[in-house]
Image (cartoon, rainbow, N blue to C red):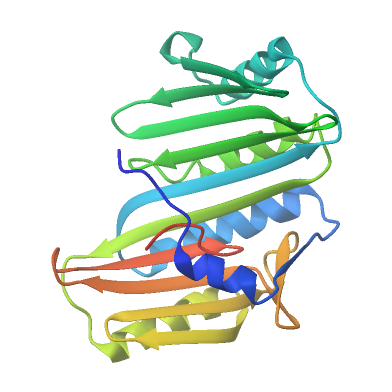
Length: 248
């Protein structure tokens, strides 16, 4: 399983001054946005490659090691996974204690980190990579969010679906795919970056009613990336909310 890294493009966006904001909507509204994301992914006729979900939660208190392990176990249990498949790593340096739990299977990799960041601050990170099934993404999102909300109100979740076309697409095809995604997501394009064999578009979708980012004075909650790999002779397509948090 390849290690997923934060993209340099993401770092660039943050340097430009993105501010995370939160809407006040029910899980049902959020789930509907994700359902449409799945429908939109299916409409572009690519071959599913993987989806990645990254969730971050911050707590205004420190946690004991046993509490950290219990949080990991609760997340694993709520996802319907078996404790017997877990790999545990525990570490302690000065006042910082960290518990790392991982399930690494053929088609799925799930990692959970619970750690103390300071005297009265801790965090939870959940990273899910699935490369076989994607239609359960709405349920997975709901489980992760509801579980983390038991410990804190501030939960950031980044989700990306990736597909591939086993050929090089012409530039006009890039535009056709982009227009279809924006139309199906009821989204307005905010910004675009184009290079040879590469396109990245940030947009705001009215169907995703919850978390968004502020990018140079605009709301952003949808990111589309299209990239052709000469080595693999494939065109990759990424659809993410609120932005792509992968090296692509």
